[in-house]
Length: 236
Image (spheres, rainbow, N blue to C red):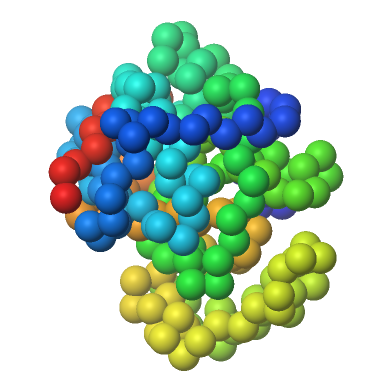
């Protein structure tokens, strides 16, 4: 199965980025803005990257509005990732198919060769290339990487596929020695690099990803028991 099929389909409409007022989510630079994601399995803290400002600001806006509160991690694949952010999941009955909801806009891709799919990466889900050749991100759906450790040769072998599939405005990509070593140490999903926008990293609570990824799921990869999230912006 093509790995892109794991991420479902999302509403595709023109992106309308919301400007945040001075009293809103944009903050003076005092290090990365952090968000706590609380679940029944424990809490995670993600640091958002300043190198992906459109994804960062959109995520903070939604968190501040309470958009994510009580939504489900609706798609869980052990050894791969946990996904949430579909607003339709808040009141979804058992067995309902999820993964199509969003806020009504997409976010332009913000690929960065220094932001990769290591374990704990926060990345934006999106529609597949056939209907979304610009690889715009879902306005709200995201995933947290679990993945697995991989040797340097195995990761490096993916460079050709990444470069063959890159968009016209993307420079050629090559892993550094430090990046290869990190995949060998902490693991991840390098086959998604430079195809989905990574815009943050879990800095506390990596074990919570493992706990959620290990739950029993039904067809469609939805957990049998609902796993809800609540989010808050942390003060620096």
